Image (tube, rainbow, N blue to C red; front, side, top):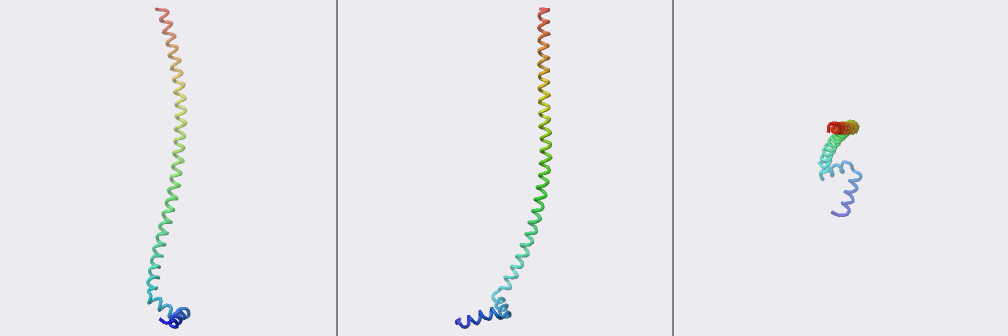
Length: 115
């Protein structure tokens, strides 16, 4: 193709809208634009799905945090109960040891008395 023809084609592409669209149609630009439109549509559907998933994840996270707080409160209560029961067991052990000591003294006194 000669330089003059090339210049004329480029000039027509810049200045003649009808010629520009005719060339675009010939080279398949219309088909490409249609495919891009389909891809845009599918991409927007995917974005909507992602938004729904994100909302669901946020809701699940909030639910989990509430459950963790309830479990923390329950565990704290169990820990306090364990401390209370340990203290009660310590006191019972002390009472039991005192009872054994008293029993030893009484048995010792009975043994000394009755030989």
